[in-house]
Every structure is written in C-alpha cells, then in structure tokens.
Image (cartoon, rainbow, N blue to C red; front, side, top):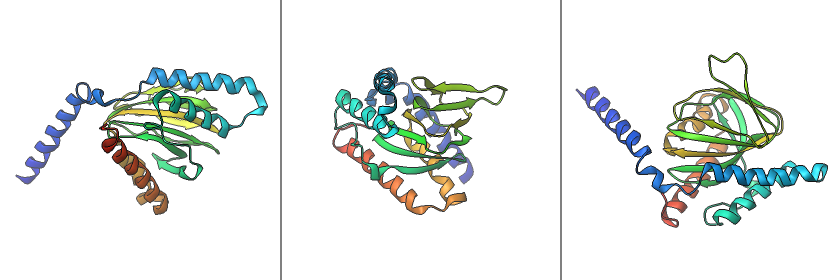
Length: 223
C-alpha cells in the first residue's frame, strides 16, 4: 500500500512538473538562448581579431562582462577566479563558474583545460551549449560519426535526451539550462560519493549554487 502511495505521488509530481514546464515555468525565465548566443559570438569575433594578443581567461571575462552589460549585475555574478570549481558528472571532469543560478535557470562558464569525455545525463531541462573556444564532440547512440561543435556554434541538448560527449583540451563554453534545475543537481553531485570523494568541492558547489538560488529568489523575486 505504501509503495502504491509513493508511486502515485511520484507520478502526480512528474505530471505537474511536465505541465508547468511549458506553461508557468517559462514566466520565470530571465534569459533567452538566442540572445546569449549572439552576445557570445560578438565577444568571440572581437577576440579572434586580436589573435595571439588575447588569452582564454580574457575571453571568458569579456563574455561575463558583456552579459552583465545586457542583463545587469543583479542577474550576472562577478567573475571571481576563486569561485571556479571542478565538476565531475557522468564520468566527465570539467571546471565551471556560476554566472547565474535559480530554480528555473542556470548560466555558467564550463569547460576543461585538459580535455574530457563522458555521459551528458538525462535532464528535466533544455541545455544550450555555446562553444567559446575549442571543440565539443557529441553523439546519440545510433550515430557512428560525431556531431562537431566549434567556437560560435550552439549545441542544444533537448530535455530527456542522452548523449556521449567530449571536449578537446582548452575548450570552454557558455552553458545555459532552462527547466526544473533542482532535478539536474544530483547528476552533478553523485560522482563525489561513488568515485572522487572530493567533499570540499561538493561543499563549495552546493554553497555557491544555493547562495545564488536564494539571492535570485529573495532579491530578484525570480523562481
């Protein structure tokens, strides 16, 4: 009887989340993937014109600054080098800086200095991955050849879709996810308990994510 109650509760919750994903939840969105893509491409073009006079870090900082100019500092966190954290999820290791986190959206700088490969995870959200530098490879299970995304291209990972992906050395992206973000968090945390045992990084990730979610909920009145 208890099992049936639990299953009924999960089913009802899933149904409600599925319905509100396309009705109520979008009313909370502050960002638009096409605008983010356009901003990123303007910064990429500027840095391409500089050639060897620029660096990866300068590119990432300028992306953050252009986003803040458009959306405002209330929505885009400052670029703080000490707030970069490792991220282990789906067997892939990367590094990320949280620019914005709420219950309905997150915007991060994500990438890898040394390269990675792993499982994308299956999420209750759409994920838009604009490559800022380097290359990302991805594939659905039936594809014998990879999808290839280079600087300026946007990779859309649809809700519920699973892919194998990899990033070349010194590849970074602006990642934007919209949907039920709390459902994505276990994917980003569980590798700590099953493999890395890096509880300090887990603590920092939980702290930085929670801090931003609460700030946006209380200050910006944004779910």
